[in-house]
Image 1 (cartoon, rainbow, N blue to C red):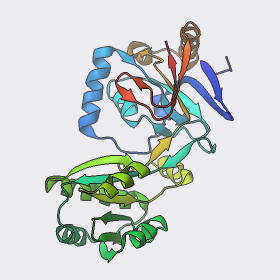
Image 2 (image 1 turned 90 degrees about the horizontal axis):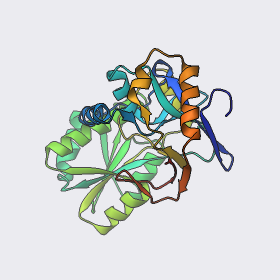
Image 3 (image 1 turned 90 degrees about the vertical axis):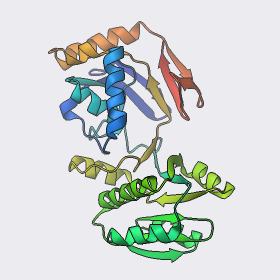
Length: 287
């Protein structure tokens, strides 16, 4: 075991370092959804276990994946969280986008009025031009229908406020009867091409922006980022009571090292289903 780590694995140039970290040191980068958070808290209390480690940038301690688990642990009084430390700036870790697919979308004129009432400048553009404007940061986001696109500009100071405005728009569309789903760019574009939905395209953030915002305590709206990790460790299964005990970090890390050394780590290729969730990335499952 490397000093300070309970388990270390390597995937190409990327190291995965499983350990525990004080909750107070971890920095979220996105807000949580209260309804999802409440369900997760109930599930954690019922199982008494934290199954999967949070994915955390080792240099900054910014949480890349696991915002709801982090907040749930805080609310149940835990002192530590199991984490997988990675080098976020590695080319092996990708930062991508969630596009929004809108089923039963409202009329574009109605949405245009809502955007204007929020203080945003709204323009109509072709699909290609609207996508270009968002990609080049000339617009905050774009909403596409089959026959036209709207781009939203102005009225925001910084990317966090732009994504917060988009979150408001999603809420308005939901209240108007739309169903919104979050898909990877390629999947969303395919769904839009097949028809029957509108599409919202979003800005591409940089890793440095994510870290800088988190270090300042500025939280992005949910689904502002999509991190693709080449392999994720799963099923470390740390008992919640150990994470709440008044033991030292080193003692807990030593316990976790002994615990994981007695289990087998099995690599499953992308597409595997673990506890009902399908993972597009490879996963390293402790059994």
